[in-house]
Image (cartoon, rainbow, N blue to C red; front, side, top):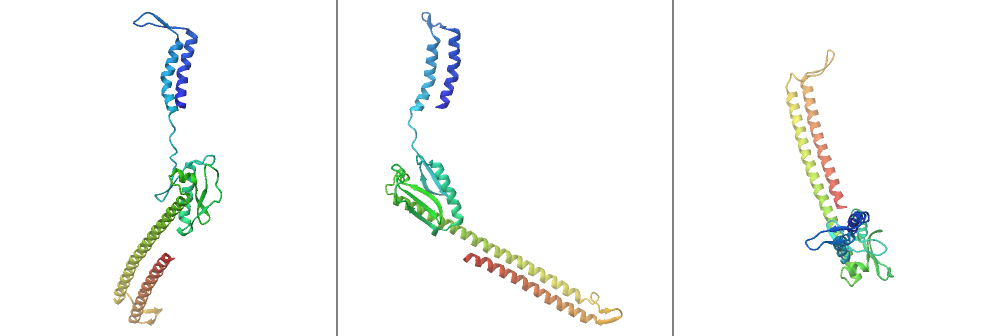
Amino acid sequence: MGQCTSALLWLVTPAFYFAVKHGRWELSGAGPRRRYSLWTWTLALVVLLGWPCVSWATEESPPDEGAMVRVAEANIVTLYDVPGLATARERARVSMQSLERALHEASASDIKLEFESEPFDQHVGRIARIYAGEMLLIRLSELDANQAGRGDFRGFAVSVQNKIHDVFRREHQRSAIAKQVLAVSTVVFLGLMALLLLRAVRGLARRTRVMVRKQEQVGAMRVGEVELLPPGAVREGVRVAVVVGSWFIQLLVLYAWIVTSLSLLTRLKR
């Protein structure tokens, strides 16, 4: 309607100026010569262009369709305008923000429903509030139930509470399953890494033992001109040290993997 009014003003203003400045305008037709006032043509133009605007203005305004409250891809409830307090969009936006926050901070068992003892007013009717612990999630009114075609306000509020409860339970189950899958995948991945590390340690120990068998690689232990240990004893000592060190590193790797795996799996049971 505002766009139509602006268009009419832009059209009428130049026509009015032309009429005032030039007086009358002659229009010749096929019939007798006739003289028409520019006011007549301006009025006809205004009526012609203004008729659609009048039609649009007189059309009935669409009914209040409300705003849907959604969380975790689930429709919870449709909220409607509360005269003098908040629009449907504002109520839905605040409710969805609270639901998203509570979804990560509260559990399904924390959902509770409270009714106010007195009606808010004659138009809005009674009020019900749904909480997750101490956090307010949704404020429902009897007006919402009437707009949804539900005459039983208590039953309407309980059904909304049950929907929220089901969404919280489903999302928490999905989150728990995702954590379990992640934990098991981590355990398997760390196990594979541990096997690769054990294989690398065994390969290094084997190459070291082969090296120390060669007499030219490991000689006697001397201090100056004094021989403390013959070559055979040195080679045997190095071989024992390599074997013990290899087993120690392998046990350390297995211990680290077992402790990490138990920690991850125990955390899932909490």
